[in-house]
Image (tube, rainbow, N blue to C red; front, side, top):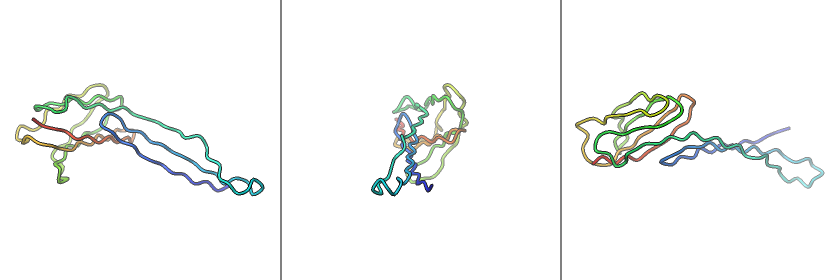
Length: 119
């Protein structure tokens, strides 16, 4: 039996989730419609605070990983190891006031994206 699988990766400032939908063709006698199996949703909550920040941020997650800090033009500025629980990150002193992007990549493969405002 042939199956089609669609996987969507959803991101927000406080969470990321993976939604997988698997469709299986129905038997020919049922008119050729497609059956859809129940969706499986898994979510790994990742919190980043305070935002805006004056120079220090906290990342709270249940899975260790790496946090990447980027300028808005996509240049990687720094990367930081993240442990389970709360990790305190001090942003570089030379970081100008403005907007930056952050990307957390968990050791389990989950990814969360953040817009960070530095005051």
